[in-house]
Length: 210
Image 1 (cartoon, rainbow, N blue to C red):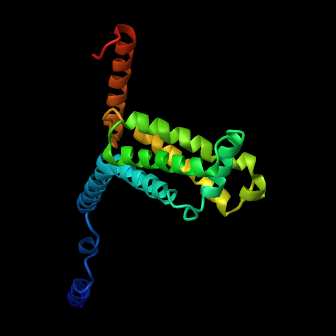
Image 2 (cartoon, rainbow, N blue to C red):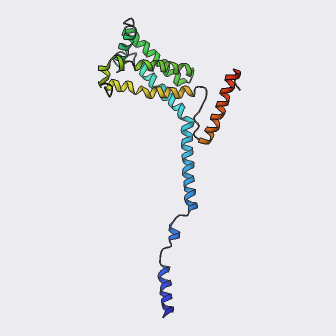
Image 3 (spheres, one colour):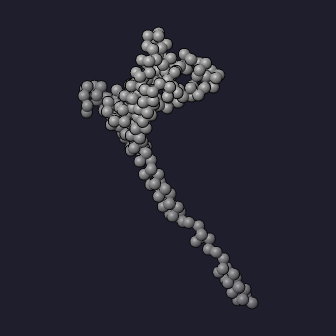
């Protein structure tokens, strides 16, 4: 009788699923996690390697494109605010017929500098100077740039406020204008920052590159 019970018990347990075979081992999970980490590293590494170049080129396209539009009166949506601002700043000495092609040339020069990668520090200075002027309509022409000052901008006001992104992009490009790159690894970044600080102290003390 006991033998029969043991036989039935062994037969019933033999058909139960083996939970150990269902659950992935910790080694397999670790291997999968490392594969994901390596994929992420490659992806972020590509971003770090090419991100600044793509930022520079895309910003150059925007400036050159919008600059060319200003050579054709009535095409650019920002031309009235821009020419009115220059008229106010110049106390009426520079009329729109002069200020608009001047501004168009300025923006095209910024765009070409960014696209070519030549004279980047000068290009960034031109960009920041031009961007400073673009924010003045928010102060000079509040009724045209805000529905409710200072919280609800009009379409023109939104067009101006988004230039904050262009300014930030210009600062990043300017910071890398001497050939710098983004370091995405935290450990490597700490070493690079210490080396950069040493180089800066050397330049300040000896007035030459290490």
